[in-house]
Image (cartoon, rainbow, N blue to C red; front, side, top):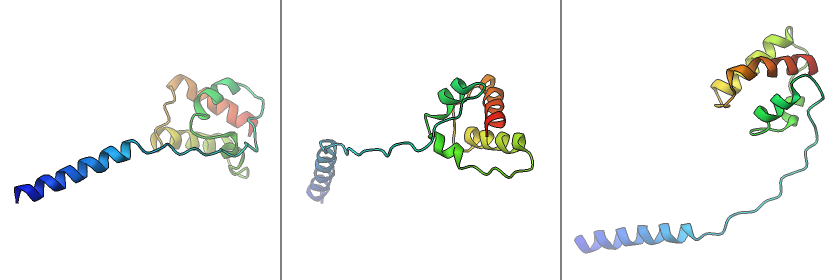
Length: 103
């Protein structure tokens, strides 16, 4: 019984070692098809937003909303609370100013 347990444990350990020597996967990312538009606080937006997504994500958001400010406020809040975007409180207003003025 003990021998069976030790063989199983050794097998699991060996698989872990083999996995640690696996070659990394390399892949080519597609070219971006959009760029952030010039606007107020563009540098703040690039510094806070491009770590997780490209300008493409912003460019495909709906345009026919009742209140652009409410829409973008909800989007920025979602990025922070739901997806854990590490955005400083001081940058939130600047990001909103950019999004409302530009999109």
